[in-house]
Length: 244
Image (cartoon, rainbow, N blue to C red; front, side, top):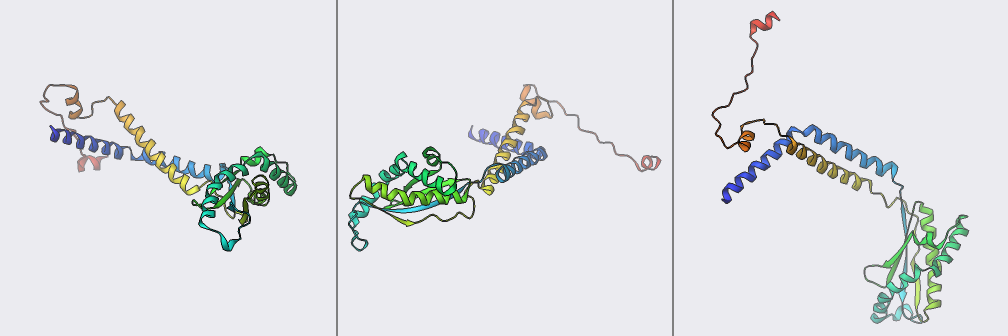
């Protein structure tokens, strides 16, 4: 029983492979269209985004100097990162950031606009917190990230007495877009085109009800096949070729 099932499975795989080979031109065409489309869309249609990041250090003790920081201070700072991240993304901080950015860029920004571009969180489960800004402009991403780095520490310590937030690194000007990833999107387009093309030809094969050989006839009828008419190829003789 198992041997019979294995034989049937092997035959099915062989048939599928033969179908793919027979439709190889269609597969190549579909894969080519998907790959080129993914490349062109990623390169020329999708707006590139630039990411700038500022890094802050969170400490629960504002009076502790760097030489005397203890493990407990670091652990507490790590726990406070989540709380401070939420506070940084609050309207209290972002309204002030929006005003500062508006003054620096001569463009109007609101807290909601800044909130849509900013994210913050801990760095590798440490007491460090990264403030990341993503926008279509590298200069704007840098300005917003550094505005948060300048404003957030004072606002946090004002509301949370005894805490300390210091700037470790200000954001640098992004030199290259962070998205879209053209190579990744192109590779995904290639794989998607391959999957779609294989799906199309297999569906076409399943919908093809024509009888092409004796195996197809055996699947439809329980009667034995007495004979098969071979394909006859007539070759022209040398005399016929000369006469032509």
